[in-house]
Amino acid sequence: MEQLKGTGVALVTPFKADESIDWNALEKLINYVIDGGVNYVVSLGTTGETPTLSADEKLDLIKFTFEKVSKRVPVVIGIGDYNTRDVVKRLEKCPLDEAAAVLSVAPYYSKPTQEGIFQHYKTIAAASPKPIILYNVPGRTGRNMTAETTLRLAHEVENIVAMKEASGDMMQCMQIIRDKPKDFLVISGDDALALGQLACGMDGVISVAANYFATDFSSMVHAALVNDYPAARILNNKMLEGFDLMFSENNPAGIKAFLHHAGIVGNNFRLPVLPVTDGLYSKIEKYLKSYNG
Image (cartoon, rainbow, N blue to C red; front, side, top):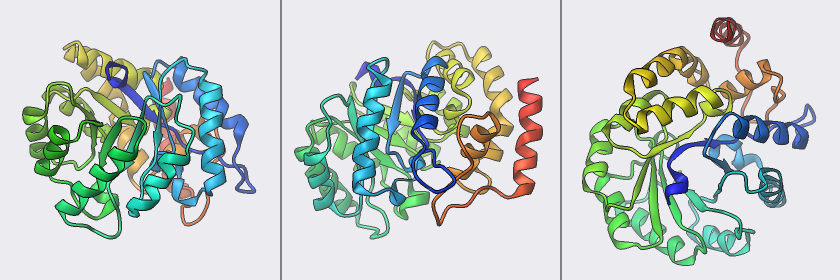
């Protein structure tokens, strides 16, 4: 799992004005982040607006991503749901031969017990042809996966190899890092907290911000992983206001505004997501003029 250390980027799904997938923009984004130095890409993460995509579109996105990445970096595929049986079926049907791993978000909406979360992951790990990365993001799922549940899965289920932790709870993060198996990766899912979490011992980041800040974010993570924290702090401080603006209204509306300003993707969405407000977009433009200057 060394290939999943460093910076992963959760790719957005670019849309045209008619809400169809903009394949040219996606290819442009893939090349942009790889040229910027990210270590791997994540397709069909929640940042990719996956709840609005059809089953056929998801399959097309997987195939397109493999084709355009062309083995330059590893690819992780997002497959998660609150319906365990449906996740198992998708794991069986999706073309995963070229995938490094599967990122699977904790069950959302149904708010299962910790035992329910454990049994969900144990079931899909047994069905998956690829290693599973747990994904804890209680701000979106409505239920925190506790450190105890994460560690139980890490120690007891062989095909579970990593955790994307986005609870924002630093005590929980540190407990997982302290008590995890030696070869189990802990990956940050919070761009704004990533530097502190790397200092605590995390192995990398699956980032939203790296869609735009590909070079600086990747350099920051690399510097932290080799204990060059003075260099990492300089880069983190440069991006810090950007993190705040990016997530102040909605993800992926914020990151798409950044990418639209850069001319990489259109500022287009499928409902219920809308573009950021004009006021926020103006703040983003002002920040990026300073950032790029």
